[in-house]
Amino acid sequence: MAPYQFIERPTPFNTKGGSTLPIFAVTPAHIETGTIDPIALDWARKAGYKAESGSLLLIPTAGGHLGGALFGLGTNPSEQPYITGRLARALPAGDWHIETAPLTANRLALGFGLGSYRFDRYKSEKSPAATLMIPRDADGADIKRQLAGVFLARDLINTPTNDMGPDQLEAAFRALAGHYKAELSVITGDELLTQNFPLVHTVGRASVDAPRLLELRWGKKGHRKVTLVGKGVCFDTGGLDIKPAASMLLMKKDMGGAANVMGLALMIMDAKLKVDLRVIVPVVENAISANAFRPGDIYRSRKGLTVQIDNTDAEGRLILADALAYADEEEPDLLIDMATLTGAARVALGPDLPPFFTDDANLAHDLTEASLETDDPIWRLPLYAGYERDIRAKFADLTNAPAGGMAGSITAALFLKRFVSKTKSWAHFDIYGWAPSERPHSPGGGEAQAIRALFHHIRTSLR
Image (tube, rainbow, N blue to C red; front, side, top):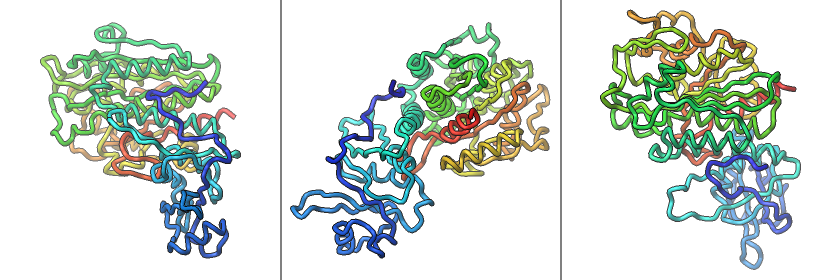
């Protein structure tokens, strides 16, 4: 069975064997020492080709036809392990294979696949693309699985809210569950109050699309319990504390946490890992109407803790609070939550390096190792207990928006930690879910963050 696709697209890979054109991936040393194909070397020297990182030089045949390509890796290819992603966008359409490359086969092919991503759903004209043969010593099935998970996250985030509101996100969640024959349950609208999810209902009740809680279960009871929770705010106006127009431009990506845990769940299910998997996604639109929640309101959470609303634009932690409390009730072995939660995380670490928080030192070590092994960057920030005072409220147990704005990512994580008490290991990821500019393995736009590292950690922890 092929991995699930939200948007069906042709594979970036080919299986045409000898009919493909060669790519010589080289460093400057290869040109200087002449250790590549002599025809390619002669053309490179005549063209003054320096093999700079990401550079491409097409090679003609004696008859003037396209005969191959030289691709530069720069002096230190390990600095950009997925540099072959540039090939996917730079090569002319056609079928290609790597003839020589000082890169591991898996990174070479995965890089090309990641860089091949296009979001052209709304484009009138679609251009053909280059395809690459997966090297024989690469794990083709795993590469395609990881690409499917990453592409799912990117597709969901890139889709504008008029086509990715709560109804459509639920439909995508249902399709993913159906593809892997997972159990599905959905709690919608006022039923959230009946089932004790008051904060999810509070945040989403002002929208014309009802708030809801999506849940997927897959795997076998008795296996390691892995639970994923993702923030599904399909659009965030800021509520009554409305955002300025410039700050709303990217708010279609505020369901990036949901998109990423769905991509991670795809990888886990497609790989048939021996886990008892549970995926929980609270889905809302933070809209404005006569029944929108207000600054100064106080609400009781699923866990019983009361929360004072000091800013309606700090809504993500509210819906996660109910979802985490619900997840925690089953005492999972590993609980991961992902959310596009704070601007403070981006100020601290920028858009490409998502922070994570955990009080489990062993888990932190293992996640960091998985990040390094997969070149999927993450960075641990502290759950500093000294800032607990900042999440206390005058008239309730907690505030959703500490005054002063200092350490905003840490105080948000400390807020969430109050709703996790039974889980064996928990980690919170404050992701951006967006690549502001093109990179070798991404054309920019919606982005999967940390899920390849998390997949690697979960898979290796089962061995």
